[in-house]
Image 1: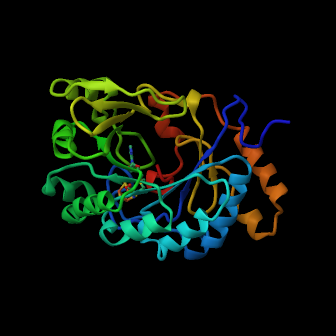
Image 2 (image 1 turned 30 degrees about the vertical axis):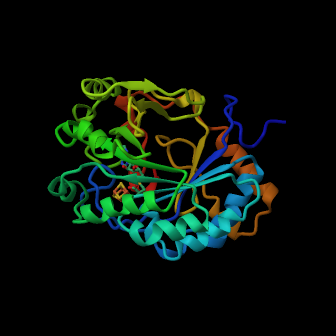
Amino acid sequence: MRSPLADGFGRRHNYLRISVTDQCNFRCGYCMPHEDMEWLPRQEILSFEEIERLAALFVNLGVDKVRLTGGEPTIRKELPVLVEKLKGIKGLEHLSLTTNGATLRSLAAPLRTAGINGVNISLDTLDPVKFVEITRRDHFVRVLDGISAALEAGYQSVKINVVVMAGVNEDEMCDFVRHFREHPVEIRFIEFMPFLANDWQRAKMVPYREMRNRLEREFSLVPIVTDKSAVAKEFQVEGFPVRIGFITSMTEHFCSGCNRIRLTADGRLRVCLFSKTGPSLRDPLRAGATDDEMAEIIGAVLSTKWAGHPPMSQLIQTNDRPMIMIGG
Ligand code: SAM
Ligand code: SF4
């Protein structure tokens, strides 16, 4: 019998990304519509107990890595309490977080103690004025301090996520390497992706090859061998502890090794960043479904996963949610 976490192409899904909220304290234009979003009503969002039950179910089916994301996960009250609950799930080996970093000065240590192993922090510019233009919030200093707090808290991995956009921040790529070169962090340069209402244009996307050329004019990048399911092309910057990762979803997709599934804040399963959102797991859960019934639903959704996402030109039509509601 096929495992419920294998899809029709034999890919096994051991990595679950859970959005714990659709809300955010930032307003990054590449992630959400310009006008303010209408957030989901509170009762539609999964409770901590529901997240724990679903996570345990997925772990039972073979998941061993969970990433908490959002919206902005750290605005969910008592987040360390959820982390502690998840940490208690036997078989869950990696528990990580993606955050905008604005609240990490106070949360980095409690989240580490509660059980988060690795943290990805988004920072798209080192220019305080540009930061306000991108995020529409004046929190540049707080985010930099949040990154310091994460380094002090002793996480196994700290990554800086940079969405590279032409005419916005592509000229800062080498500045990022210079800024972080003495630290044991990975800077992940991400190709700008199209999502609902984020003004994506082909001309604003800086392709991987171009990003790499920019860096190699100044730094020597030594490839790091990663496993098949790794999304980033990773490099060591010669002579420094800092690493570089490129997320090349647009120009060199990595669908054949994909091991990721996503649970949205309202409990729907999404098998690909670029697919339509799948059915609700929250509703059968609230209606009292057994673990076997839930596993059957999950298996059916996974069997709909495509071999690879459509070409760039079509992606904007396949997305039914802005990135803020998917979770990255
Ligand atoms: N609020 C958290 C944060 O900003 O890190 C977590 C949620 S955010 C949706 C997750 C990641 O998606 C962030 O690193 C963000 O930069 C990235 N992201 C959002 N919109 C994107 C886009 N259009 N293209 C590429 N990456 C994007
Ligand atoms: Fe919020 Fe993160 Fe989206 Fe920015 S990228 S709006 S911080 S969810």
